[in-house]
Image (cartoon, rainbow, N blue to C red; front, side, top):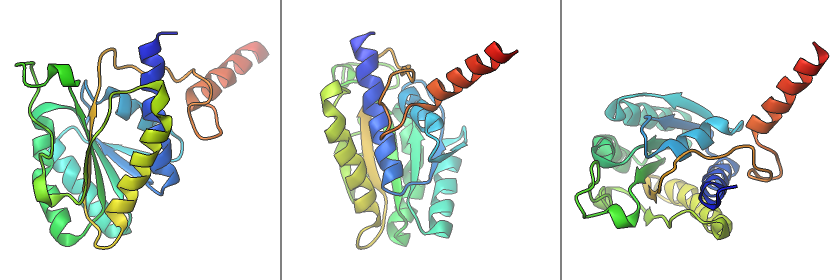
Length: 208
């Protein structure tokens, strides 16, 4: 097992799992290369409904409307670069309307920042005062399970506590970006849906 892939898998699955455990039931995803780990982890988790919207501006207002109507936090995922800038109008409205949105942006790893790498912009505190809390996340590591769970739990708490509003977490990911959902113990007390599905298929093949 590649150490990087194992670390990446456990990092994103534990984060997503804690978001769900903390009460996030819906996520709106605008697909992109750098956000692949988060997008796949959300799609894999059976406890959250994922909505796909290719246009980030439309996706952000869709998430805003959903969070406002349901009066509960909604997660929002996009890739790195200018994709994240398209969230700003909806985030400003969420700020003034006190709507809880958990904004999750993927980013280049730290060594590829400010060196002219393509699709790399400064995403640190990019929404300024319009988010209640910002966290530039650590790079994935197998030792950071407790850390990512704390950040996920705090994200929901900050977005919903007091005057509700948006929060922003920025995730630096190194390549390769594809998690391995066949690993054991990557969800809270359960196996992955991928592994369960594979076993179900194998059982069906044996019975045919």
